[in-house]
Length: 129
Image (cartoon, rainbow, N blue to C red; front, top):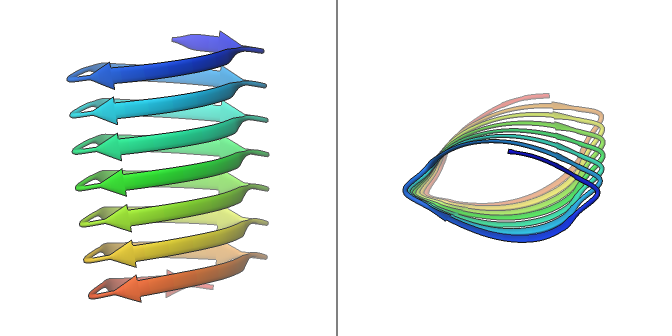
């Protein structure tokens, strides 16, 4: 799926999805999916449950709620609010303003030139600054 200049609401269940979003306002609900996403200049609200997700975000305002997921994320110049529960998380952040709340997670993070607020509960965290 490649979406450009759109206002979209998407609900995906039990799927394998490759998505490219540019200049979009998107609300997404994903359940039990394998998702690869590349987002540019988007306002994005996402709710992910039981998913394997690979995400690359550039110049985006993103609100993400992840539950029971395996997530790999690459963020560039983004404002990100994330709520993660019971996740395996690998994150690479550059020049980002990030607010994160993590519960029962295994997290690997590499941060460059970022302003980060993190709330961690019962987590194993490895951070590279």
